[in-house]
Image (tube, rainbow, N blue to C red; front, top):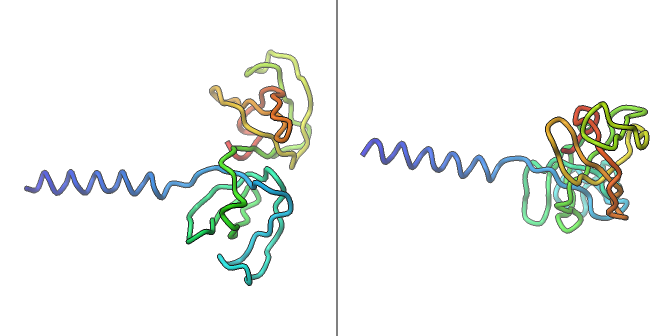
Length: 148
């Protein structure tokens, strides 16, 4: 009997862990109001732009509570959130390369705060590209971005 109870508790912990785990998503529209509470009448803390990467912490009714790369947190109306993963550049003049290693040519430089769509990951590298155009650019080290 004790084994069955332990098995059930372990199963419940696994299920709850996956339900409560934070997920990376992004803002689906431009100039989205981020609010202090899950209510249209609550204070607007800041505005988030299209593609802005967020880490969803919890949901309440039709609202999503998230944190971001600047350690800000707030609520946004769930239909304004996309499952598309994006990344924001954390440093100035970050190298985006042709391949996922330091020996490949640099295809462009990215500035701090720029947002790119994530197309894939390989080891410590993230494949990024343009959000709206759905166009791949190249690879960047994962320690230079937030959102992957």
